[in-house]
Image 1 (cartoon, rainbow, N blue to C red):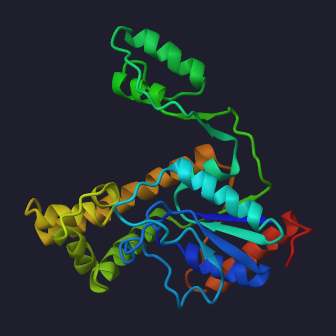
Image 2 (tube, rainbow, N blue to C red):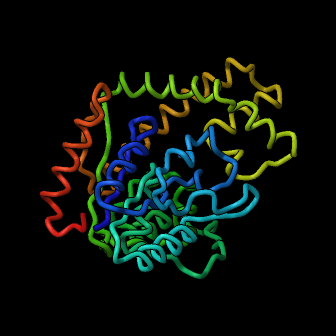
Length: 289
């Protein structure tokens, strides 16, 4: 049985993954693009060794911050783990929907990485090429930059996507007001737990790798250290970007994946665990619990 736990930051994905892994004697596979990297701990809300409860966890801390890691790499690593542990129950947990889709669906990549020159084509001709590759494209016909970028992407996904592994995708959610409050409080807690010091360590080493310059919580503090923002402005921007990212996550999950959503009972999380367990057992009568 493969269970996937998705949702925005701060809704209890890690806590649920541990509870379900204990109940179903499962292994846990990370599905968060930033938690792949070593030493990005506070800003990614990475699970601690104590929190793992001796449950096997995979694809956490597998790359140094200066190493490259793509969705193609994740697909290969995740599928290798699925095959290696096919006699066990598996739980994917994380908020990177594209990683999950690449692992579990017929999401293909070309070997060819050469960028093509489309400068001789009109917007209409570009758009027609994009439609041939993806009849369901939502790119505007005159957004030339996005049209060319899409045509040069090396992934090819069938429409509708073909599921390669039977699985359930469970989404944790709450109302927007509660979610935004939890995100804001979570950022404050990260600051209290030493996020500034975590990022400063990388900054002082002169590291400017993609995770640090694009990861929420890291890129904003880099701007603070560069004196482009005050500390208050940087923290406020982390909160703002985290809220916007949560909105984008919902959009991807709802449009790209078959998610069953559950409203989290933060006052009694066990109620949420019980509700989800009942759902799993109704939909997976032959699980290895």
